[in-house]
Length: 425
Image (cartoon, rainbow, N blue to C red):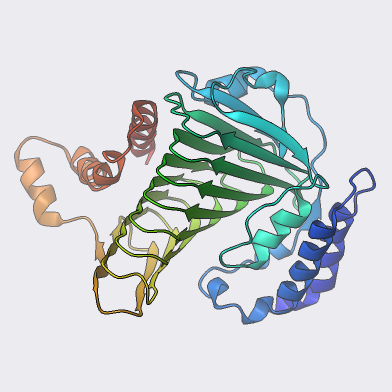
């Protein structure tokens, strides 16, 4: 914390330099966000969320805007999901139209400047890095599905961050997306974040999704930052009457990640299902925070979170389900299962319930496991060598989450990634 105190004024002045960039006209909303950011920054050292993972190395850097670089088309094409999707490409926080699909089916895509008059949802749980992204993003991608739209082809947003090799400078880029899913609509959203060439960068992402009545949305997030990256993701989902939202998040060996998912189930007979899988190695640090509010009756929520930790990685899970007085006949569960592969890896878990009525069915819990020597012995007695036996156990642990994905292209992508990763461990 001493490092932070020594750098506090320097950091906020560098962020303000990015915020006040001369060619961007900031709105009154953005100016207010900046004021909130400054107030939260003063209270940073009192925030319990940063208790287990130090950001001292992060705060030592100079924060600068990335320089425009020549885009490597071949590299982007090789790393993208290519089949059966509408693709939108972003590089260092900016939408790149000529790399993106011009036709996006029933999805209506609008690129808004920060000073355009837009009514966006207020944050469910305000926090510092949310407001950094709200303040420093240069454009807002506003995406809608109109009433009665059934779009079978996923919308695929792929984000590339170039980063730098500098020891002191940290390229800073931010993405702001909002999805408006109107009544009786159905669609799949895939957000994919990739760090290029293991270079350093600071990436902030803020996504909000408003789901109206009688709709179904499948939201999939793939996080693949570079080993030297700092990534802060904040997602808010607002669910209205008789709707279903599925959320799947996969973190694949990606530096330092703070991921926050906040959900408000605001109307009756709506359901929310969330599954996450985090594969951590080297010195990866991952903190996943979930906050789910049940604000109406006859609703169901299910959460399954799994962390696999190799080497000296650190994994944290902090989840809270809040069930309000009017939320009778709520059925909710939150489970965090953890697999510690190496003795120097570390995982902390804190699932919580906050219940304000008696007519509910709720459960929460966490488990911790490691390589089971008896199971390894059994597999080896069947002619499987030690490495393959260990990898089979890890793949079996991950499969429960992977099997819940509706999109085959994502199932194949994750399965292939884990297979190749285990070959290199």
